[in-house]
Length: 460
Ligand code: FAD
Image (cartoon, rainbow, N blue to C red; front, side, top):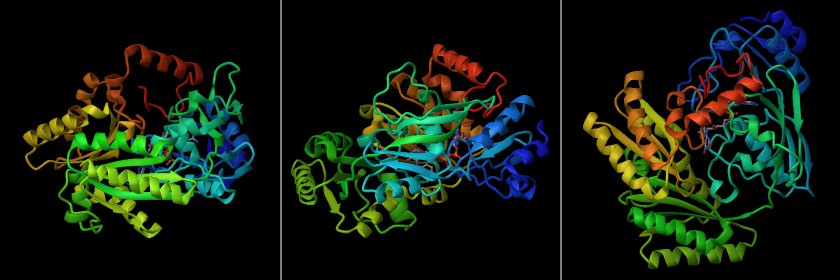
């Protein structure tokens, strides 16, 4: 490491500079559980300390990796022995809730679930939601521009952030803590940091936009007989439920079958013989109207043959049971180990052709290969898991080529919501033009000229 530990200790206090076993006993990757290899971990208490740490690192040309909740899925938080990790685990305060303006001001290390709970306590909601809610942090959600299961209704993290504060590579603090919906005074600087995966600065605080509550949820799992029926259902539900469609999460049969029949981790609410399963959720503020509208929409879909079976959750326990199948990423990873996972986007109409062609290519190359697909269909986002007997680099590269290369012709993306990190860097040019990558390099050079922040992530 370039920076002397005593410099860091003088800024944050000795107990907050971790070395040796205190570093290696932490994992740095959710998927592999690999131990953290950083030279040290520093845990600032606030923006001021973080700024001082960054300034000192800049002076000594010390490379930095930022850690939030470590649930990222593209190796964005990996650190080498010569890198210093800055962890935001002490910066978790919810500073203010403005009920009139509908905003929540928070430090970036706060877990997503705590923010959701705090909003609920004052009769509002923070709508971003994803399976890692208990561990992932607001800073990580901003850095990766997280999506999740409510994007179809509320958009991605970018749409939930009104303002933010970030510390730049040289330690300067850019406070852009806007609280208004409208502010067109010059460049919208917060957008630089949202989705840039910690490569342009460290997010320290944010003003989040809260939404009116939708306390009455209707949740159903339905089975669709074909892909055409599935897309027809999406369109019909969008029309029938209007603005209240909150989630439309699709599991291909291979996903549903694996978690219910093969692994037996969940009792199947619907027989596992249909091509597609969908969790549909309607979020409303009027219990009776929401229930009637939802039931009628499902009945109409049954009558028109878009769905062939349906289970309507009658309690929150039943609702959780339906979601548990979709959110059982741990089961998926164990059931397919060694597994390779992908998060892509492409036009909805192309999805079945794409997954069929991928499966054919995989099984031609490895006859026992398995493909499992689920995703946020309405967002054009598929999560693809492949078991090809090995997760070693040569196999990974071959499978990546099969998954990513067809996306270019379809106008798709190698990353729908997880980011690029280290994992997808070789494939960035599949979905970004050279002019776009050049502009990204220009921004990186302007904001981090010594390339100290999250080295090698997104850009080489
Ligand atoms: P980390 O993993 O700690 O970091 C992720 C990246 O952000 C790293 O590059 C890191 O350096 C950087 N970073 C972290 N904090 C900051 C900061 N304050 N300032 C600057 N850079 C920072 N993602 C979705 O979009 N949708 C989903 O539905 C979804 N579901 C998931 C389900 C599970 C079970 C898991 C494990 C992950 C899921 N994810 C999903 C991945 C998602 O990216 C993360 O869960 C989350 O957004 C990352 O937050 P984190 O605090 O864990 O970040």
